Image 1 (cartoon, rainbow, N blue to C red):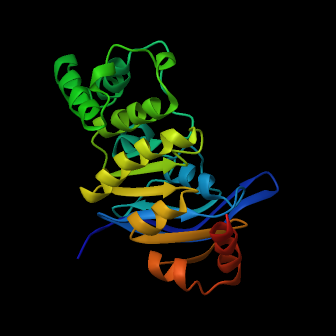
Image 2: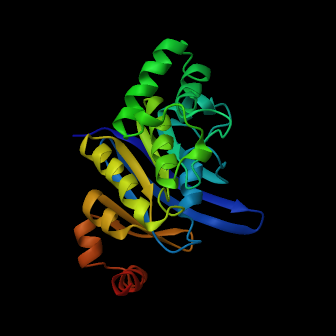
Length: 246
């Protein structure tokens, strides 16, 4: 039986009087590929940002191996090395080469020496097909290439869980496939991933759990085959019928 890595209990998040997440309960075990789907504004990205401590939950707890990391005493950079994140907008350092982008976190957070950081960075850039571009700056790359570098940078931190916040939504359609292919490979290798995505075919075919969110709550979650072929919740049915028509 796989070990539970993250457990969210009664999580809520408000910005002033605007409540974005309401009483979220959620868990992820080792090797899970969980896709979070739903319309824009449903709270998906805010949930992910709470899991990565980029936002502080208003109430509730986030347990990582049983320890509440929503506690103010958590070492956020050390935690983020274990629960990494790939952003919609890449978030690469534009003044650094591809190689340096993949080395800097290892050196600063993991305290690796430059030689071992470089070896690890090269290995992960090779893995995502970006080894030929190690000396390029981000401005010289396509969107798909930038996102693959961002994935390599996250992998170089050797995370236990990798969060993806709509990793293909800023890409031209012809570049989406190259990023999804990398993510499919990572899923097949057993990396634990939580993915906010509008790529429904990917969610259906690659994940082992789909979570549907609307208006800041989890309306339905379950096996992809069940969610996509026999959703129980009316909001889920309406959302997926719009997708199927699209």
